[in-house]
Image (cartoon, rainbow, N blue to C red; front, top):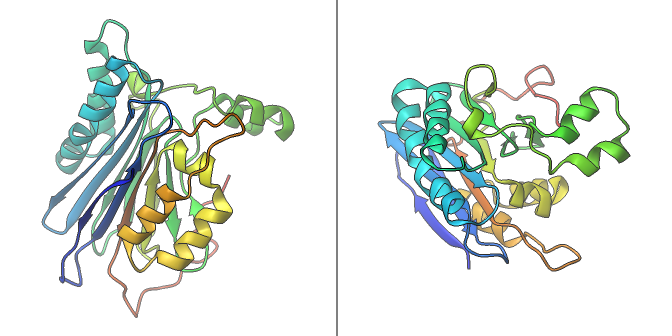
Length: 255
């Protein structure tokens, strides 16, 4: 069952948010998410725990609010690093990936991430991935290994929140002209796929909650019947008729 919550307002300068989480076929759900507002600024975070044991599930649920609150006052790097230190409060530090975004009218959207949670941007024409997975598969691709071999290592995460710090976290800025930003766990990106995600953005971009619900509902089980937990947050600027179109120079390469 998809669990959703909507934040809406009539203020044309306020960010609209849609959120959906669909537990997978193996309980309990080890995805977490949170959104925090202050004035017109919105901070959002998605966390994906590896496995389903009690510690992982608890960690994935308690860290997203920490990330959004610290992110609001100190920025994404401090937020991910703080959440990472929380992993060491357990006998065995849970492994988890996370992606954080700060969206505010008149500013580019700042994103920070660690692991294989992803950030995408929809510019009205194309869906672009703005984050790069920190997996062994991606590492092999960047070092010239054949795609056919590298793709077998995409589930091998090279780092996670427990290792978060300035040297490990990655960041990017998405131009304000990109009006819709998606934060997703790999349950969305792996089980829906880029083409389907892009089609759903084209159909539902004007309604962030409808888009979030559609993305979560589109996840499909694999040949063995397994379907991963799937979580998405959609952040949307109010439409601006004078907004500059995103150019090729603005757009980050999709990998």
